[in-house]
Image (tube, rainbow, N blue to C red):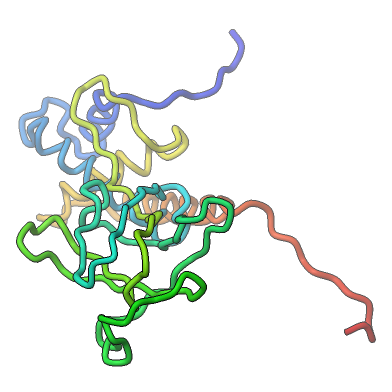
Length: 229
Protein backbone atom coordinates (compact mmCIF):
# COMPACT_ATOMS: atom_id res chain seq x y z
CA UNK A 1 0.00 0.00 0.00
CA UNK A 2 1.35 3.42 -0.94
CA UNK A 3 1.79 6.15 1.62
CA UNK A 4 -0.84 8.87 1.44
CA UNK A 5 -1.06 12.45 2.65
CA UNK A 6 -2.48 12.82 6.15
CA UNK A 7 -5.95 14.33 6.29
CA UNK A 8 -7.43 16.51 9.00
CA UNK A 9 -8.60 14.55 12.03
CA UNK A 10 -12.12 14.76 13.41
CA UNK A 11 -13.07 15.96 16.85
CA UNK A 12 -13.86 12.35 17.80
CA UNK A 13 -10.30 11.29 16.95
CA UNK A 14 -8.80 14.20 18.87
CA UNK A 15 -10.94 13.33 21.89
CA UNK A 16 -9.47 9.81 21.85
CA UNK A 17 -5.96 11.26 21.68
CA UNK A 18 -6.74 13.43 24.70
CA UNK A 19 -8.03 10.39 26.60
CA UNK A 20 -4.78 8.55 25.91
CA UNK A 21 -2.64 11.50 27.03
CA UNK A 22 -4.63 11.90 30.24
CA UNK A 23 -4.81 8.16 30.95
CA UNK A 24 -8.61 8.35 31.01
CA UNK A 25 -9.46 5.87 28.26
CA UNK A 26 -12.70 4.87 30.00
CA UNK A 27 -13.88 8.48 30.10
CA UNK A 28 -14.66 8.21 33.81
CA UNK A 29 -12.84 11.35 34.84
CA UNK A 30 -13.46 13.91 32.10
CA UNK A 31 -16.68 14.18 30.18
CA UNK A 32 -16.94 14.83 26.46
CA UNK A 33 -17.85 18.45 27.28
CA UNK A 34 -14.70 18.83 29.40
CA UNK A 35 -12.51 17.51 26.59
CA UNK A 36 -14.22 19.63 23.93
CA UNK A 37 -13.71 22.76 26.01
CA UNK A 38 -10.00 21.98 26.45
CA UNK A 39 -9.59 21.19 22.73
CA UNK A 40 -11.31 24.40 21.68
CA UNK A 41 -9.30 26.44 24.18
CA UNK A 42 -6.17 24.96 22.61
CA UNK A 43 -7.41 25.87 19.12
CA UNK A 44 -8.10 29.42 20.29
CA UNK A 45 -4.60 29.67 21.78
CA UNK A 46 -2.97 28.45 18.56
CA UNK A 47 -5.19 30.65 16.41
CA UNK A 48 -4.33 33.69 18.52
CA UNK A 49 -0.62 32.91 18.20
CA UNK A 50 -1.00 32.93 14.41
CA UNK A 51 -3.15 36.07 14.40
CA UNK A 52 -0.64 38.03 16.49
CA UNK A 53 2.41 37.22 14.43
CA UNK A 54 0.99 36.29 11.01
CA UNK A 55 -2.42 38.00 10.78
CA UNK A 56 -3.01 37.05 7.15
CA UNK A 57 -4.31 33.63 8.24
CA UNK A 58 -7.12 35.21 10.24
CA UNK A 59 -7.68 38.45 8.35
CA UNK A 60 -11.11 39.25 6.91
CA UNK A 61 -12.60 42.44 5.46
CA UNK A 62 -15.94 44.17 5.79
CA UNK A 63 -17.14 47.37 4.12
CA UNK A 64 -18.85 50.16 6.05
CA UNK A 65 -20.82 53.08 4.59
CA UNK A 66 -19.79 56.08 6.69
CA UNK A 67 -22.01 59.16 6.44
CA UNK A 68 -21.02 62.79 7.05
CA UNK A 69 -22.03 62.57 10.70
CA UNK A 70 -19.85 64.11 13.40
CA UNK A 71 -20.77 61.31 15.80
CA UNK A 72 -19.07 57.89 16.03
CA UNK A 73 -20.87 55.06 14.23
CA UNK A 74 -21.11 51.38 15.14
CA UNK A 75 -18.70 48.99 13.49
CA UNK A 76 -20.30 46.21 11.41
CA UNK A 77 -21.70 43.34 13.46
CA UNK A 78 -19.26 40.82 11.97
CA UNK A 79 -16.33 42.93 13.19
CA UNK A 80 -17.69 43.25 16.71
CA UNK A 81 -15.03 43.46 19.38
CA UNK A 82 -12.31 41.76 17.34
CA UNK A 83 -9.00 43.49 16.64
CA UNK A 84 -8.88 46.06 13.82
CA UNK A 85 -5.81 45.54 11.64
CA UNK A 86 -6.24 48.48 9.23
CA UNK A 87 -8.88 50.74 7.68
CA UNK A 88 -8.93 51.85 4.02
CA UNK A 89 -10.97 54.53 2.29
CA UNK A 90 -12.32 52.89 -0.87
CA UNK A 91 -14.77 55.61 -1.86
CA UNK A 92 -12.85 55.92 -5.12
CA UNK A 93 -12.38 52.34 -6.27
CA UNK A 94 -9.49 53.24 -8.57
CA UNK A 95 -7.58 55.05 -5.83
CA UNK A 96 -8.10 53.48 -2.40
CA UNK A 97 -5.82 54.58 0.42
CA UNK A 98 -5.09 53.55 3.97
CA UNK A 99 -6.21 55.70 6.88
CA UNK A 100 -4.02 56.39 9.90
CA UNK A 101 -5.20 55.65 13.41
CA UNK A 102 -5.19 58.38 16.05
CA UNK A 103 -5.71 57.75 19.75
CA UNK A 104 -8.81 59.24 21.41
CA UNK A 105 -6.33 60.91 23.77
CA UNK A 106 -5.14 63.06 20.85
CA UNK A 107 -8.55 64.37 19.83
CA UNK A 108 -7.85 67.87 21.12
CA UNK A 109 -6.00 68.66 17.89
CA UNK A 110 -9.13 67.99 15.83
CA UNK A 111 -12.26 70.06 15.47
CA UNK A 112 -15.07 67.59 14.94
CA UNK A 113 -17.17 70.21 13.13
CA UNK A 114 -14.50 70.91 10.52
CA UNK A 115 -15.35 69.52 7.09
CA UNK A 116 -12.59 67.65 5.31
CA UNK A 117 -12.22 68.29 1.60
CA UNK A 118 -11.87 65.42 -0.82
CA UNK A 119 -8.15 65.94 -1.32
CA UNK A 120 -7.02 65.53 2.26
CA UNK A 121 -6.59 62.23 4.02
CA UNK A 122 -8.46 61.91 7.26
CA UNK A 123 -7.74 59.72 10.28
CA UNK A 124 -9.87 57.43 12.35
CA UNK A 125 -10.24 56.61 16.01
CA UNK A 126 -12.09 53.87 17.87
CA UNK A 127 -14.45 54.07 20.84
CA UNK A 128 -16.08 51.56 23.10
CA UNK A 129 -19.74 50.53 22.78
CA UNK A 130 -22.50 52.96 23.72
CA UNK A 131 -25.22 50.39 24.52
CA UNK A 132 -24.49 47.03 22.86
CA UNK A 133 -21.37 45.51 24.39
CA UNK A 134 -20.55 43.86 21.05
CA UNK A 135 -20.69 47.09 19.00
CA UNK A 136 -17.61 49.30 19.32
CA UNK A 137 -17.64 52.53 17.30
CA UNK A 138 -15.46 54.30 14.76
CA UNK A 139 -15.13 57.99 13.93
CA UNK A 140 -13.39 59.81 11.08
CA UNK A 141 -11.54 63.02 11.86
CA UNK A 142 -11.96 65.66 10.60
CA UNK A 143 -15.51 65.20 9.38
CA UNK A 144 -15.70 63.98 5.75
CA UNK A 145 -17.34 66.26 3.19
CA UNK A 146 -19.35 63.44 1.64
CA UNK A 147 -20.41 59.86 2.33
CA UNK A 148 -17.38 57.60 2.57
CA UNK A 149 -16.96 53.86 2.11
CA UNK A 150 -14.51 52.22 4.49
CA UNK A 151 -12.97 48.78 4.16
CA UNK A 152 -12.16 47.40 7.58
CA UNK A 153 -9.56 44.65 7.95
CA UNK A 154 -10.15 42.73 11.16
CA UNK A 155 -8.95 39.58 12.90
CA UNK A 156 -11.69 36.97 12.60
CA UNK A 157 -13.06 35.11 15.60
CA UNK A 158 -11.28 31.77 16.13
CA UNK A 159 -12.61 28.44 14.92
CA UNK A 160 -14.01 25.84 17.28
CA UNK A 161 -15.43 22.33 16.93
CA UNK A 162 -18.68 21.02 18.37
CA UNK A 163 -19.80 17.86 16.53
CA UNK A 164 -17.84 14.60 16.63
CA UNK A 165 -17.44 14.68 12.85
CA UNK A 166 -16.03 18.23 12.72
CA UNK A 167 -12.50 18.34 11.31
CA UNK A 168 -9.68 20.38 12.80
CA UNK A 169 -9.26 23.83 11.18
CA UNK A 170 -5.47 23.58 11.47
CA UNK A 171 -3.02 21.61 9.36
CA UNK A 172 -3.00 17.85 10.11
CA UNK A 173 0.66 18.19 11.11
CA UNK A 174 -0.43 19.97 14.31
CA UNK A 175 -2.91 17.40 15.59
CA UNK A 176 -0.56 16.34 18.40
CA UNK A 177 -0.07 19.96 19.47
CA UNK A 178 -3.85 20.26 19.72
CA UNK A 179 -4.45 16.99 21.58
CA UNK A 180 -1.46 17.17 23.92
CA UNK A 181 -2.11 20.85 24.65
CA UNK A 182 -5.73 20.03 25.49
CA UNK A 183 -4.63 17.16 27.73
CA UNK A 184 -2.23 19.45 29.62
CA UNK A 185 -5.06 21.91 30.17
CA UNK A 186 -7.06 19.13 31.85
CA UNK A 187 -4.13 17.87 33.90
CA UNK A 188 -2.76 21.22 35.06
CA UNK A 189 -5.30 21.75 37.86
CA UNK A 190 -3.73 19.03 39.99
CA UNK A 191 -0.26 19.35 38.43
CA UNK A 192 -0.47 15.82 37.05
CA UNK A 193 1.33 16.38 33.75
CA UNK A 194 4.61 14.46 33.48
CA UNK A 195 7.92 16.09 32.65
CA UNK A 196 8.00 14.07 29.42
CA UNK A 197 4.66 15.51 28.38
CA UNK A 198 5.80 19.04 29.18
CA UNK A 199 9.05 18.64 27.23
CA UNK A 200 7.28 17.05 24.30
CA UNK A 201 4.72 19.84 24.19
CA UNK A 202 7.42 22.50 24.44
CA UNK A 203 9.23 20.97 21.45
CA UNK A 204 6.01 20.71 19.42
CA UNK A 205 5.02 24.29 20.26
CA UNK A 206 8.43 25.54 19.18
CA UNK A 207 8.02 23.69 15.87
CA UNK A 208 4.57 25.24 15.46
CA UNK A 209 6.00 28.74 15.93
CA UNK A 210 9.03 28.17 13.71
CA UNK A 211 7.03 26.57 10.93
CA UNK A 212 4.49 29.36 10.82
CA UNK A 213 7.19 31.99 10.44
CA UNK A 214 7.27 30.71 6.86
CA UNK A 215 3.75 32.01 6.32
CA UNK A 216 5.28 35.24 5.03
CA UNK A 217 7.08 33.37 2.28
CA UNK A 218 10.80 32.93 1.65
CA UNK A 219 13.21 35.48 3.01
CA UNK A 220 15.80 37.01 0.72
CA UNK A 221 19.06 38.69 1.61
CA UNK A 222 19.78 41.92 -0.17
CA UNK A 223 23.26 42.05 -1.56
CA UNK A 224 25.11 44.99 -3.02
CA UNK A 225 28.64 45.49 -4.20
CA UNK A 226 31.05 47.24 -1.89
CA UNK A 227 31.34 50.93 -2.54
CA UNK A 228 27.88 51.13 -4.10
CA UNK A 229 25.41 53.18 -2.07
